[in-house]
Length: 359
Image (tube, rainbow, N blue to C red; front, side, top):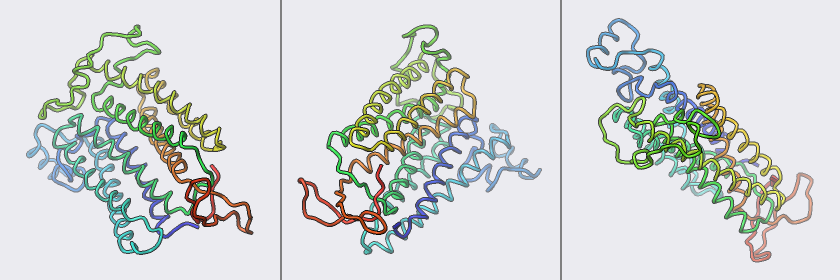
């Protein structure tokens, strides 16, 4: 049975996914500076529309003419992000109020609250520092972190508990997969914030070569100057090529490790999770290749961000099941299996839980 707060956490998770995709859409439509100030837009709560508002915008922001489409892309993202922030505040307040109830997570909602405040700061710096790549990448990672932590909270409130003992090697594989996927998402953010997605426009080579000229020192120069407008990027072709190549190499490494993880899941009987992981991986590879082959069409590029989110959430689910070892006792009740409390079974602690879902 789901615990109180489950539906709210689930709704917040779905909203966080929408916010991540809106952020990707804003970035890919070059609308990150569609509103040159924060949290408003040219000093208003929405995009300027009337003659008086447009005159005010032209007077105070002469270097940034109003582009309504880009402004609405940015403000829509902010509206949804603000709503998500309020939901997380509500989740944290609810967790604090019910902190003495058994099984009520407290640290996770409070940590989420800290993350959302950090995200608000990164959202502001994204605008005020004119799309500085370090901040843009950090803001993207913060969005994915918010999404994955909300999903973890939803799992913990769902009342669904893992039903299998898993070997320790599966935990190692699951951890490695999660870390590598996070790293690959960070690389993807660096590719996007430096406008390196089309630095290589052929497959499987780059500029017709397996190892073209690439400037890794400047491509991963993490102390770029604050001040210039980074819309469109400031790096030269060789530096962008280096970033793109690194993202491709990272994709190969992630693929190998996740294939190994899928095999480990199959070995221990978690065939559903293995299948889900393989589907998410295959979809993400296909979308990544399509980005290059079709020269970054907007729908495919946004879908690639969605694929990254799906892969990350799948890894969160895998780690959730790999790190919660329970023993299922073989006596059946009218409404399913139940876990009987025991001190130790085969050196593992067992707990009492609710309806298990066999992955």
